Image (cartoon, rainbow, N blue to C red; front, side, top):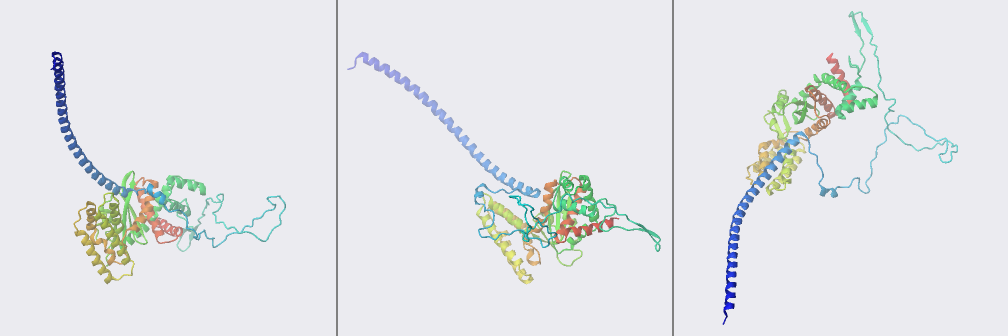
Length: 486
């Protein structure tokens, strides 16, 4: 039996335990309430997180679209610099020829202008007098004249004023290869043209080069005046003849690139054949420029004329047959394949396009046979229609499909017309020198400067395309043009 004292202690302990139990129950209730609130807050945060992830995905897709648009516009202005990836640097091919490869050195000039015998009077070791020898070791050097002797030649032509008894007029002799009323010689003017348009020197570098090489002092304003006078001499006849040749050619190319005029974005257009290139610099990239240049292309010929161009919409309304550039199509297709999320459909389509291009290139490299070419045309037209009508699910594939749909049979024109290439690479190559000049000079400082660039550069590039001797041909056209001005 418990005594009273023990019962009292147990009751007190029981009361303490009840009190502690009550506090624990209250604490548990508070924690459960807090847990409920946290669960509600967690669900809200989970919902917000889901919305943010969805928004992030949408932003990533928008960013990819913006990047592609940026790259497109960026390509219109300048070529992106291509830097090798870090992980491929170690795989870079070693420079130099392979082991056992026969080296190629500079060949000796076919003609030796002077022979100089070099000998010693005293031994360089003991200073003893040496006897002359009949044997020698030849060493041929090709060099330019000494800079001390390379200087300008100032000529005063005393043009006699003579009287003709038959005509009863005074006549004055004119020197050959001298431009009337010009205080600068023809050779100097040609050297300025070569430095500017072939060597692509800036005006400041050109002035310094003339000063250091020939000792002639001329300002940048003087160089500009020379270039503008050359433009007058060449612009009336030679520049116009290039335009006529472009318009009458059965096959021609066209391309354009940006060109700043007075700090404002403009466009340099290039129209060319195998032997001529016609540049024009305009304020706009609108299709009206191409129409104005090529609008009379079919006036003097009964045969169809073909324009090779990229997929820029400014050309599509021209009344010509069109060959769309395969290089541009394959480049866009390759860009889609290189994307991290490229679809399997896109990769398959890219391989199909590459295979088709290789087959077309093989056909166009063979002698022209219209009957066989027409059969090939119908075959590949069917392949294009199959690509166009296929219901692709992937967005990247549909983008290339849309590009193919817009060009359609323009991709196959080269099959049924002779000497028509599948790509517009010829125009790209003629645009590149102008792009280099643009990067050096920043464009043109005036409308007059832009016109001067277009005329002079067209003449010089056309001479080079024809593989004509540049200096002799420039002498002829400049004398002719200056005579026509007077």
